[in-house]
Image 1 (cartoon, rainbow, N blue to C red):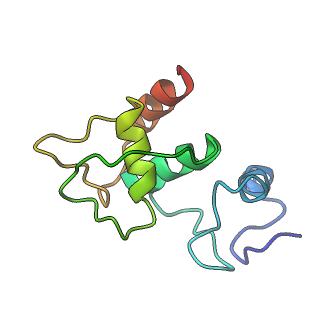
Image 2 (cartoon, rainbow, N blue to C red; image 1 turned 90 degrees about the vertical axis):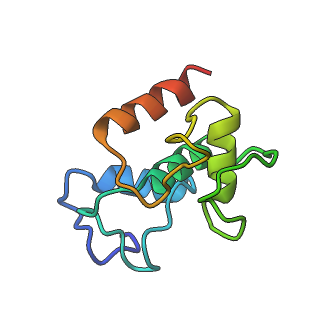
Length: 114
């Protein structure tokens, strides 16, 4: 059994979801919901990678559109410091923008090449 009412045991991604929950990579969009068909934002993707990497300590960097009180602040700082992202230009990260497939594979490539 698992905590999400919107994930069935027969779904092809069920085992991946259980792995992600067990490893602290995601807690879902609400306590009982994963929202498996939702599109990920840039901030959500770097947060998954940051948590996968053990949530290492970060130093403050500056993206004007990444407030310090957001859940993804440390993840974005880590992604910038480790070369996973350089942002989208003009001191911006665009945390709420959809993360394209090209961006996701680039983030993965850079994160796992370290």
